[in-house]
Length: 157
Image (cartoon, rainbow, N blue to C red; front, side, top):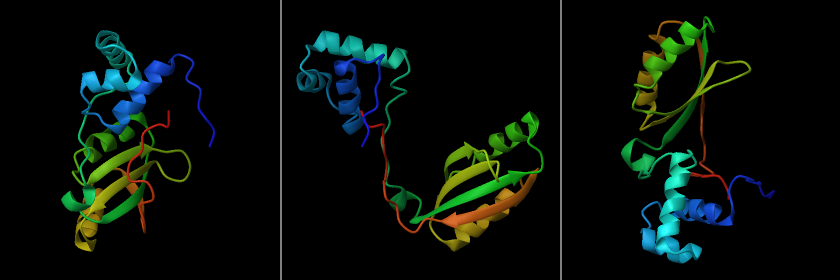
């Protein structure tokens, strides 16, 4: 595996990011102990990494299977028009779907790739029905995930 260089971050910054990606609830004292820096400089570095946008926030990770269902579906959506207004209108609607985990504007054969998590085929049918009612949707194509290989991932530092 190739190591990625981060010229604007030193080894302590990378160590902070690595530790926080492993445990976002780590105490500041434990974090400073584990990276080998005293508490105040560690906190200063964390605040700088937050201010510079390397750390976007802190959140809990939930078990999608237990909360939403075991079925992951990837839905490619093609719009009738790729105008800025059409894209914005679609995005404004799709972010309201609670079963939608990710939405990507794509190049290639479709305009958007959506990842949704659903409990069963009835819920999938409901999602398809709702997608077809969004103005400007021209085509929908779905693929079901057979196996999740990586549950979640953060950049390898």
